[in-house]
Each structure stands twice: as structure tokens, then as C-alpha cells.
Image (cartoon, rainbow, N blue to C red; front, side, top):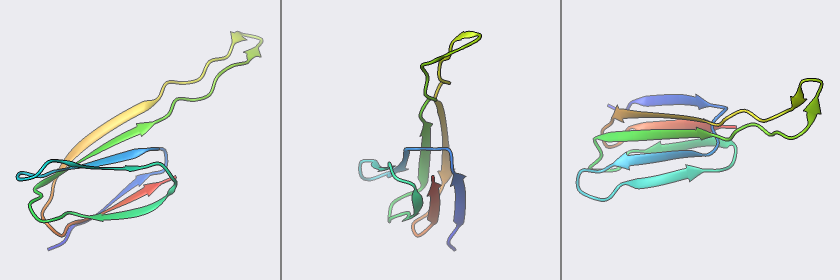
Length: 93
């Protein structure tokens, strides 16, 4: 059975996906451009880890309150059980 797991990541850029392989080294896939990406878990995979980053906001400038600075970036991570053939859809943008 194939799981279809859709993660709306409209705020996350770039996205790195790490597959935890029990036999081989981990694979990392990084998305830098907006789009819809589909990844299928290969043979030997039993877990996948999604690590999501968002850039901080821009800064520089002045207001009546003084110097205006940008907001901090964001990070989130999740590890999911997976089996070979599971599809993961990533939406970036």
C-alpha cells in the first residue's frame, strides 16, 4: 500500500528531505525553487525525515519607532515511518 502524504510548505524555502536508509548512507534533496515535487521512497527505506527552513525577513530602514529590523527565520523537522514505494508530495512556494 502506498501512502500519499501531502505537505503544504508554502512558507518553507529551501526544503531538505533526508531519507534514513538502514543499509546505505542518507540521501538529502534540497529544493531552492518554488514548485510541486514528488519523491518516492526507494528500497530499504523505513523512515523519512523532513527538515524545513524559512529565511528571515528583510530589514533596514527607519520608522517613527527607530530602526526597523527583519524577523528571524524558522525551522521545523519531522520524522515519519515509510516503506518502499511511499510517495511524498512537497509544495514549495
